Image (cartoon, rainbow, N blue to C red; front, side, top):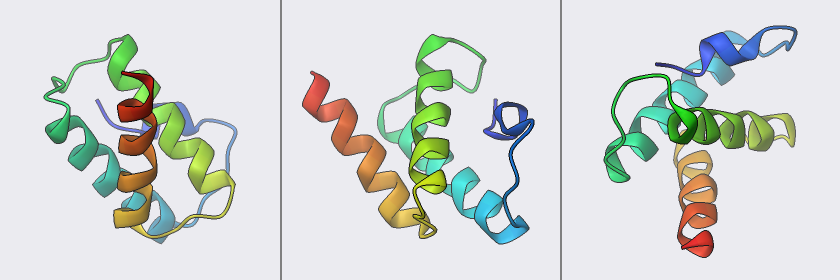
Length: 74
């Protein structure tokens, strides 16, 4: 799975989409999520999209922001 299917009806520059994809892969790897479409991976993608819509463009900061949310919830 990638963030791309969840980007319908949203406009992001190719560079931002690439950063989001990098962050998504890194978060999934860190959380040991499989590369399938399930609730956990979709939540990761949704959070990355949320932070990107708020203006974050750096893949490392996207990664950290999402990972921090998952750590805070546990």
